[in-house]
Image (cartoon, rainbow, N blue to C red):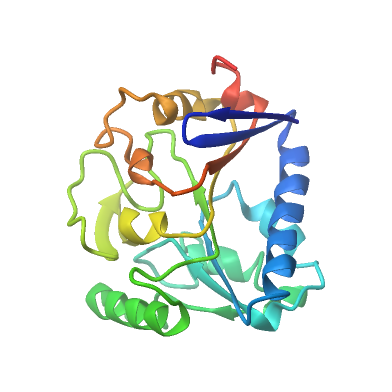
Length: 241
């Protein structure tokens, strides 16, 4: 594993996905254990997609105080919660089982009623009930990075109100609900999970100081501490590291 600081980012570069998965699983597990030694609850925000699924599968087998963990999605597609397109469905079949079935999970859509305005209101209400701060603060947020530079459901060249905490967006032929940079950036710690050669360009643009945030919305995410980037060699092999 190679560790290197680049501007506001702290890179952890792994030889392959398997080593990355093992490390990130242990990292999140330790975050939960250490935090719950001094805090009553651990607030975890996670991403959907295929890349983190192996991490969630492994993490579900860790015997942690999951009953004290609150789990939220950074974004969700406006689809039936039982659909293969649903991040909720993926999470329930990967992370929210075994030991981790004891965790609290906030469903974006409670049923097949895909009323996105109502879902946004209820999601925000639960966030404000479970989290402290204005905006509400997650202890740890795990983000993905799309090959087009999007993160959560913040897509290139899409405008949104900088004061909003949750928005409705549209990308890759699906309507979505997404947390915004305002609430994501307030997280105590933020990490991007980036794997595969298809992410080369997006990763280069993410760390390019001259790159437009409108073209690469992941750049909207900021933090008072270093933003972690867990990536494999395939994703990072074109970086000047």
